[in-house]
Length: 460
Image (cartoon, rainbow, N blue to C red):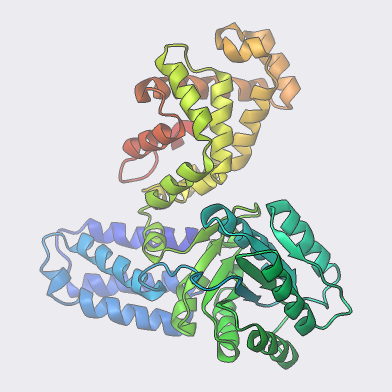
């Protein structure tokens, strides 16, 4: 997300950094580039205008022009105004009510409401320790109810059954009663959508809202629709008392215009980002962290939180103990590290949150992909236990056999051997710090211009 915007803003900022002093003309020139970058990111024009007016008002004052480090001061202003544009601070779900707390999901068809319901259930169960029940009031879309039931089973949530010949109001009433009987803390209600905003859908969801009186009413919208996302959110906000917005499919959105437009146009906070297909791919929205990502500063706080939550601490401790005891880092350890990396969202998910990535060239970024990690795991899986434990035994004929077994080329096996030696050296320096240590090491090796020469540890 924000890849295109980050690249354009980074280029504009880098040009200003090269000047000892900034004149009013330099600032105006830089802001023109920022304007183009925002419009290309599909940010709504009124939002772009309001944002630039605020930045310009501060940038053309003594705050920047008389600063000893004017470019850095301008970056600080842009960061602060981006944060203000997206809502200043994170707005959590309001769960401080008598159970069951009702969360109503609304949105257009195809926005991802059903999968979001499952992700939200998993989020509440794991991070808030809540008992969650799901119910579908979508009696129009074929197999919508069955799909939500499957999602509920996958995330271990309770499910209130319903059928396509029932009225949504009757389903909702019965679900409330069932949630109370089964002592659910939260009831998530999935509603019907349409391909576009129409009166029938709005009347139905408004009636459900009035009946349920939910504590949270979240509008679920596909971020890749850009300005249309903000406009459809506004249409729903005019009918429903929305408490927040969930932006889905942000992992496939290189522009990010919706995230910058929604709060300004609707006045409602973005509460979550859908960042992938897995059931745990739902992130709370932190405006300050997202602004840092947009400006290429990374988001180490979110990355550290991900590591603490998703990395198997017991396995990491065992590996640390093994390395400290001098038993060495082998291919089984490397495979474990790669698996943990995949749990964190893969290389693309990691790089999005590392500082300096916004300044990486497109050529280096193109070499860093999750398919490479999958290939590395396949090669290790093709090794015998002895080869994993004693890498020095892997000679030419063994490399050829490993390549055949993993569907790769001998050159790929050779490349993996080089990367293994690099990781082996890194682990020695970090004294068994595992994934946490590796991330800290990568951050230390990261110059202001981006990744280490050659794309770092995973370059080819």
